[in-house]
Length: 286
Image 1: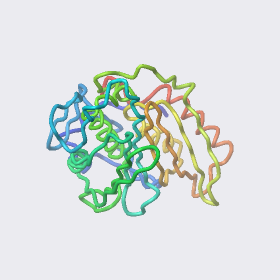
Image 2: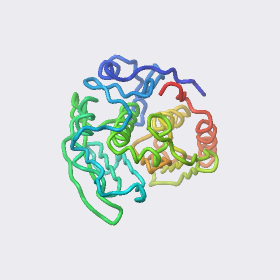
Image 3: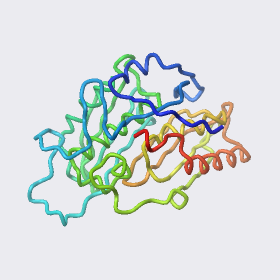
């Protein structure tokens, strides 16, 4: 059941890879690549179809929002949050980004998403006690539909995080990705065994709700979907949240259009715990 995922460059050729890679449609509504390889970063660079973004602090005056000069280094750095929501909009994938009140218009982030072959069909901003929330509704440019490919969803997530680290380097210490392609890695490391929490509950007559909380790392979303579908469980939709050093995922899952039985719940939970300690995606590929 464990198949090591070979590293491959995803960048200038992302659009061709999406069209040409052999795909197997699973009943989940997600695509799993037949090639079983996934690499978003190579030699700590993001390669898009139009630009190359290196993960270092930027000196340009762009619209992603710059740190106010009056902020001292002693200010408390807020926890960055990136949410990939497949549930709230039937026609689009909703992305929400929060970093206290430090984010600007995120025009460069929207441009980076367009370079992935995506359209930003709606954008809005709202404020609450946790800060400023930037929300985008995005669809695939080629189909006009929401994103259902886990590899592309992970590419979206890492593109957003990479831009966040580039234009707000202080976020590097608050994100697990800071160790992979940030300037300053997190000061603390999260133990996978301690951080991992798995819950499975019935969610109506035809499906269950799987909740996974674990230490974040590149390629995690793809690995989670692969672990689940490798034991013939269908993933119908879900939400994937990056909150600082942690990742929190919720998937609506089923087995032959029924909720997951207790014995299969145990198999699923044990498989997730094992493979979260032994990831498919090798760190050297990022």
